[in-house]
Image (cartoon, rainbow, N blue to C red):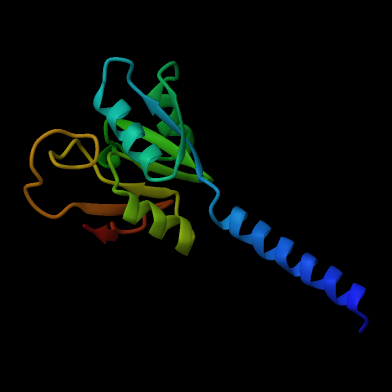
Length: 149
């Protein structure tokens, strides 16, 4: 291999490594659908953005309709629903669990931290106990815990 070929090969390898890193560092895009009267959802969106997520907030959609389209049971409802990739995320789910979902890519509809527990990202008050995040599965699959934080 001559010097010129070696320099071109090195440059191409460097560019490939840099583009792979840029892709790995890209922010996951998410749309957070919320009730226009709920401010904790805006705090949750800030939390996600500060952790590298690209979040669009939409307060104009019918949450019940979105949940119906995503096949989300009432028992999993939080104060908002977020769509990230093809997953639904209900409630104030911590980033660690979101990253687990996006890394493992399970064959589920999404995940849920039901209700509005104090101490979750975006909610005021102290954390009282562990947060249980459930899988939202299709059909009549028994309830399954996705993560505990």
